[in-house]
Length: 196
Image 1 (tube, rainbow, N blue to C red):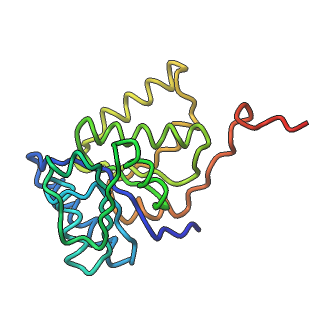
Image 2: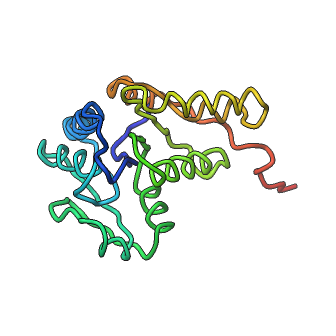
Image 3: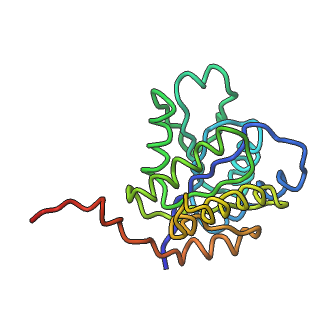
């Protein structure tokens, strides 16, 4: 069983209008704190991002925020975090979050959340990491996305083993349990160097 000491969470910088999403974000923050799992996230005090971070802090959890320099001028940075890491740009932000995390969970969000999810799962597909990637499907938010991915598999544009890199559940504890029992796939043969 994989130890998850640090989990990066991708989620919206807006709150949206579904109170269930907000309550589940808070519940995830509390759960991570209670299980002594450090939260890594985008460092904002606003939106869903702010809700999960504050909940984790309120329950004595450790929270690391990672933010690019240019966004510090635009976003409202949470000043009460355990640690704040500033990067030069967005790519370095994602790279840093990847480096310091044992796994990833995506909550509802917008374009930025989707971009983070798909980059990290593409890195897994390419064999750049073997960390579990969870999708917390709150209130069916990601039902249409999952259906689209299934269509990609059916059309032969996405391999089933790559589709299965995404661990989906609508229950926080079940999702974490699945992530702990995640068995990474072998690095694709075409990525292995021919050393003969």
